[in-house]
Amino acid sequence: MKFSETHEWIRVEGKVGTVGITKHAQDELGEIVHVELPKVGAEVQVGEEVCVLESTKAAADIYSPVSGKIVAVHEELRSSPQKINRDPEGDGWLFRIELKRSKDLDALLSGEQYERFIKGEG
Image (cartoon, rainbow, N blue to C red; front, side):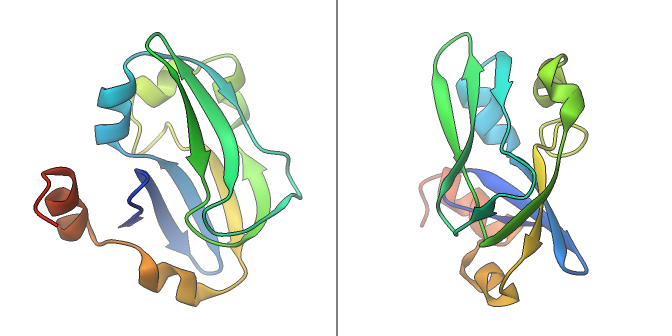
């Protein structure tokens, strides 16, 4: 699993990555009550806003950690956004993306680097 500095994670199998928000992001947002998912088939660039999460505290833009084509969205979240609250780095995934360039992953953080980043250690 790789992480972005905007608190998204991606787990890649073959050419397809599953994307969601980190536990840290979910803790900061609080209870997520609504999700606007991207459209399947949409082409997105690394760093582009792809969906929005609304919580009891605020709305948060979610950015794509890689460039590619959205190939699936987690439809269950439309009626059950609480899955993100319970398991943001697992069953609370948001969308799947077919990677355009695997080298996009090189710019992301490892788990250890992400932990240091959220602690403010660089």
